[in-house]
Amino acid sequence: MHIAITSVLFDKKPEGICTGRLVRAFLQRGHRVTLLTSSKADTRYTHSNLQLGVYSHRPRSPRALFKLMARLEGGVHNNFYMWTRYVARHDFGGDVPDLFYGRAWPHASLVPAYELAKRYQRPLVLHISDPFPPPNEKDMAFDPDFFQGLNRMVAVATALTFTNEEAIAYQQNFTRFDRERAFVLNHLAPDPMILGGAGKQGHFYFVGGVGPSRSPKPLLQGFALHLQRHPDSRFYFVGALEKYLRPEIEALNLSDKVEVLPFTRDIAAVYRRAGALVSIDAWISDPVFTPTKIVEYLVSDRPVLAVTPPGSPVSKLMARSESTGVTVTDYSPAAVASGFDAILQLPWDADAYARRVHAMGDFTDDVVVNKFENELAARLATVK
Image (cartoon, rainbow, N blue to C red; front, side, top):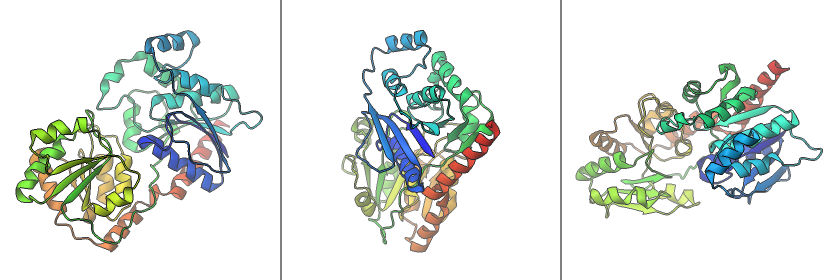
């Protein structure tokens, strides 16, 4: 197939990295890809079957003016409105793609795929990586323009892809679509990070961002209690913003035990030092997230400490290999501290990690692309 993918992000931030891996998998399979992205993306990747269109993500303000323009023009309101207009005018010449695939987050990534599919009369597929409204930011539910536009796009989509079944069920509470049009498309795992030996005992690493919607407080409060029993332990945050960490670190007197490290592309160096890898989900009653972080962790030979709500997608992934990780579903400091303690008791076992990587086989390139092809073919057959 010739697949057009529209995405504000590519090879940057979690959703852009996921889209980057999927594009590479499509190309490896023999498909052609036209990627229409923004000036926020990392566009250094090249391939003989990849056509690239990069459009400015600016201007983005005044937002009120763009919202008014969307109403007057019959467009879909979003926070990258001018970018979506530029992309929707892309000229394919005589080489029109077989389908258009909008990859959100952000929501704006869906819009030009919708506009182009309508213009060229081709099938539309929408990927909703994180559902709308995010269950930890439900104030979005009260923006009628946002959901009017989202429902307009979803209504004409041949297929919708999500990262787990929980997200599909949640999204149906806010968006009108038949369950038959939706299917799970897993994140693509990177190549396994098998380093062949244990990291530094008691050195915990959290890779990625934290913030108001995913607070690091439970981790830091639990780690402070853990230190009372294991004073030699250390905690490192890689790539997180200090403003979300420093106040709590100082309040707990952890400045000599917790370090905030800059973002790095040399993940192997981070994993090599790590005695264990740490993840935390937002505390919500209806967990719907499958973070890319946990998929990456689980294809390594490092133990994983996951703090996550009961019954979450993360807890189900962790259950695939209980001997190589610890799942904590109680966010109290004492429970999290016990999780840190328990990780120190896990022996490093090469065979156990090999089994864990094998158990993550449904996140590999061939399996994910094969599922996309088969699920899409089934839905196109019903349209015809």
